[in-house]
Length: 214
Image (cartoon, helix red, strand yellow):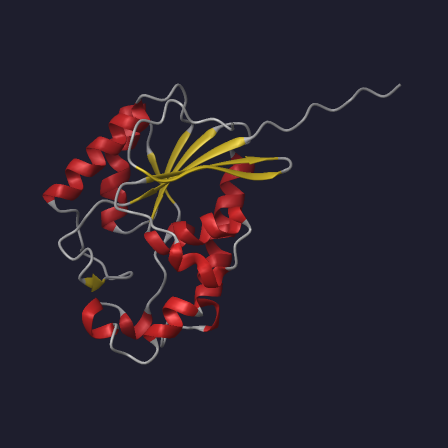
């Protein structure tokens, strides 16, 4: 009788949004360089590091290459005695010509309702579509899961990519992903097993020690 193969151990991915910057909630910064965490953002990052540092195990810390993400990942990695690995797949959506625009002005654009209600049909002028962003972040997370099978991975990214991951894990259409809230330095935990993903928490800012499927 052939021996039964051992089931693949699940991989826990902790998706962390970067901390607050001087423009959070005011401007669509996108991939523009030179945007750093504010004092509040640095305090948020230290808080996230403390919460993640209390976990029994973390195998790797990855970050988007943008400064605000790397500055959030640094104290998390330090708390675990790890180095931050940069992964361009965790980048913010490329907002193209909308990069740097004030949100109150962009909200007056006729395309804004499409961004909010039919994102799967929208491409930012000279930038990325939401569908392309979603495909990119799904591919990235899938690679991290396979590279760290059975482990715990921290991935510091941005609100829209994280929301897209959550929507996919929940089996929710991308057109509904704007209904998901991902706040600065919140932790979204998804357990990826052989039968698919299990969303343990979204937009979480409390302790993480009790994370487990019910």
